[in-house]
Image 1 (cartoon, rainbow, N blue to C red):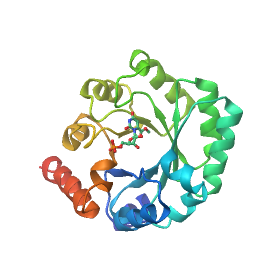
Image 2: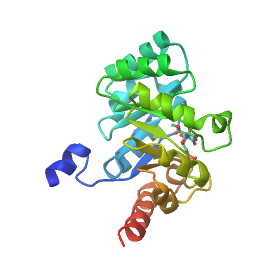
Image 3: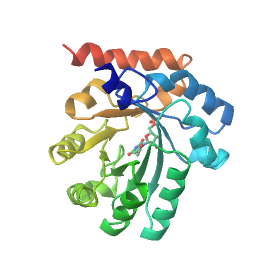
Length: 224
Ligand code: O7M
């Protein structure tokens, strides 16, 4: 059993439901936060702030501490998204996040280039967006393209529920918990497999303690 958990996340023997959104610029700050919380999270998600300052090489450096998911919200033609995905794979990314509104052809190109990397597609956002009008269609496209999981908001119960109902067999990862008002326990009860948390952790005086607080609130409420 311990072995199974070990393979689930090679960085820890404990299964975590939290994806840490590491949205900072500075290299040393990023590395220090990753070192501090890496073992206690399912993955670390990075976005343009980290990449614009440090380049793609930081994916390899951060991978010392956790699975790295590159949240580049790909939205382009097949050839371009393929080129970007290939680079992320080359630098040891664990996962990549793509938009799905660009359609089946583009999303399929991401899945194909990703190989063993996990692909997550955005089908609903943590703020109102045009995607709200087409969420069902985006789930269909995502399923057909063969993604591993969907991104759906942890702070907008109506949309999270809707995505959950249509997402059988796919993982759901949810931003919007903490700084954007969502509650971690509600999100998990409505169907999130993993919650994405950024500011509440990295702006805290005690990032590890805050993270452990989130984890124990899940364990206390959900394991009863
Ligand atoms: O906890 P926060 O609000 O500081 O961070 C949330 C993270 O989730 C941050 O990296 C956002 O870019 C991201 N995010 C959203 O906040 N809303 C969305 O709809 C989608 C994402 C996201 O992660 O998409 C993959």
